[in-house]
Length: 141
Image (cartoon, rainbow, N blue to C red; front, side):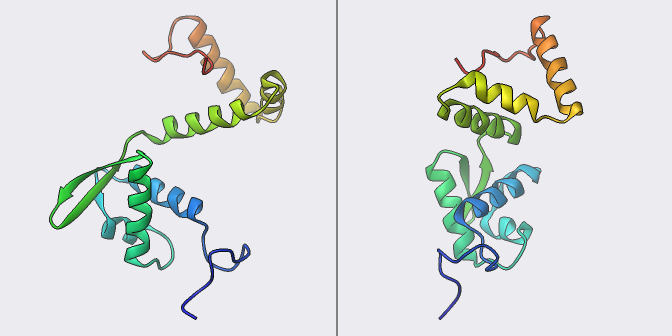
């Protein structure tokens, strides 16, 4: 047997595909520019096979989350969106899954730390004053 199976329980030392994708994205966001598969592999924790990193990069490219440019015989990859935009889209997607937006938002806000609640109030106040940083803020509608 060459290693753990895909469906092994947590704690087996093997990361799920979603966790690998997140790790790869984090490495790319932290970089100053596009990275090759080998450069990504060197920035990831643990020991991953080069082919595993290539597979994850290809999947993220197929999902339109990465762009790639020719570099030598391979490619260098860069994220399409910055981390904040990616996370905001995921949050909005989760919000849209719920049947009661008001309840979900109320629960979300009630569980914020005092600092995050204050930051959210500042951001909303800035939006009210017309300071949205040039981006449209419409709650995803």
